[in-house]
Amino acid sequence: MALAGGSAEAVVEVKNVAYRYRGSETEALRGVSFSVPRGSVTAVLGPNGAGKSTLLKCILGVLKPLSGDVLVLGRSVRKMKPAERARTFGYVPQSHNSAFSYRVLDFIMLGRVPHHSMFSMPSKSEEEYAIRVSEELGISELLGRSTNEVSGGQLQLVMIARALVQEASVLVLDEPTAHLDVSNAVKVLTVVRGLVRRGRALAAIVSMHDPLLTSLFCDHVVVLNRGVVEACGPTEEVLKPELLRKVYGIGFTSLNLGGRQVPIPEV
Amino acid sequence: MTAGDGVRKALIVLSLPAAALTSLMLGRYYLPPQVVFSTVAQAILTHHAPANSFSVPWVIVVLYRAPRIVAALLIGIALSVSGASLQSMLRTPLVDTYILGVTSGAAFGAALAIAFLPPSIPVEPVAMVTAILAFIAVLTIAWGWGRGSVIALILSGIIINAIFSALLSLAQFLTPNIHRLAAITFWLMGDVGRAADWWKVVRMLAVIAPCTAFLLASRWRLNALSLGDDEAKALGVRPSLERGLYSVVCAVMTASAVAYAGIIGWVGLLVPNIVRLLVGSDNRVVITYSALLGGTYLLIADDLSRALTSQEIPIGILTTIMGAPFFIYLLRRAGRVWR
Image 1 (cartoon, rainbow over the protein chains, first blue to last red):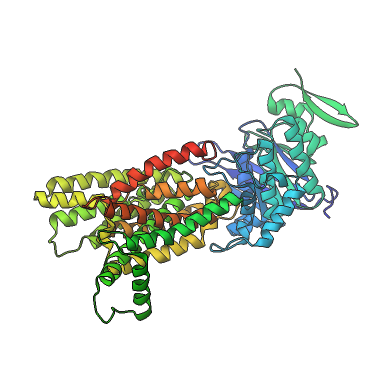
Image 2 (image 1 turned 90 degrees about the horizontal axis):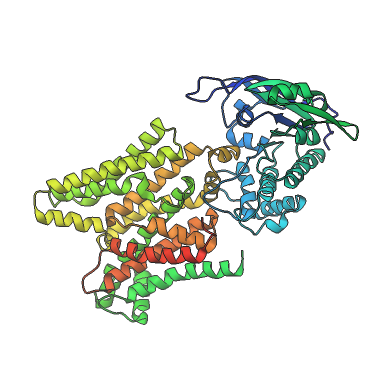
């Protein structure tokens, strides 16, 4: 079982990453460096347009950084083959939008793709594994339904199940709470934190736009603003009102919640 | 899988041999089932004509109807399987292999051959060559300038189709005589009878069988491609490379079918969508059942084209006229399941 934030060993190291989109003059990311400790839920926090999704795509290897490198357990993501990268990172996109609706079980099974060659099919035991994973996440009653019949919160859990079936070492979630109401947001983040605590993943990298949810659920935070890292470290140390005011442009107060400081926007 | 799913799958599977048997019986000269069975058994077991050589049923079954049935099945399979695969990898249920330029390329080649080449030169190889040329043009635009994205592929398909349609009109306009112009018009309507010759069937088989086998073998992976490029990449797929590979396979087998039988519209669009409405969108099922239903659908359309009137109605007309209302009915019934 992985230690909960106790060890300082880095699972993912982002080193001086820069990225620029084709046809764009400004760099979407500049000199981004931070590390993700083993056993942590690490948030990439920032306002809209800060470069969070771009950073996640660079970590995943979906985008190739202009410069810099991303290391997973000391190995460069650049040197990995696509299937190997997919066995390293389990990606949960912000939302899923397909022209075709799949049965939830079939959708979750797609997590097995990186474990197969081009001409092979998943086996019965892999399907049983997918069913066990959905029981673990409490979504087994959805398995027979179609992906366009489930709610946003359920779909997030379904995509998390797919990432677990992928047996990836690190979970990467792109704004999992963006389209969710507060109860579903809490549910999804609780599940993610539980998975990391139970050692089902070495760490989780979650992009977030809400400082409050970040302080409640994430051990570690990287604050991104206009493509550069503003601060990074343990959540409680980093998310101070002054920093948040600078990044979001509005005032924040720190509220004591059972001995824990949480940032609340001033209204 | 629900019980309803099972029943629908069984019906699709059984309809193919049923349609094949009926097709052997039906025609201007009706053959009762027992005659069909004994003739087929004889042909398969002895590999040659009976002692009283060239009995009427033997000639009808072995030389006329059987190759035509196999041709219809092959063409139906090629169009439906490539339609289903393309819809998945381009992430839209609204495309067909026409988007790869092969159909309009073949049409132009056929018109060229019929209008300007001596009748001794067969139309098929010319149509095949122009079909492949059109596809290469689509690939060049989509991958040369558009890095193989979905939108680049669809747009380059539209551009090349427009160019080849214009070239087809030009060829028709410049056709030296009215009989050849009529021949072009008939070619464009599509006719399985043209491919109903064992030698042609073997040549089509040599292309369509391996292409279909390839897509069947990689059908699960098409699901991953249908999720979109970012998600596909995160699952270890190289979307642009694999899309390129699958579209080559689709284009080659469609070119083969179209070169022999002419233009048979709507099958590649209609059949995979019907299959999805009946048994769901998982390509592990869709590709397989599109092959089965595509074969059956074209066979039935061809039977109607042979049997409805004293003169054969071109099958391209029938596939569309039969398909469209049926599709509307299915859409209404499916309601919001299909979107």
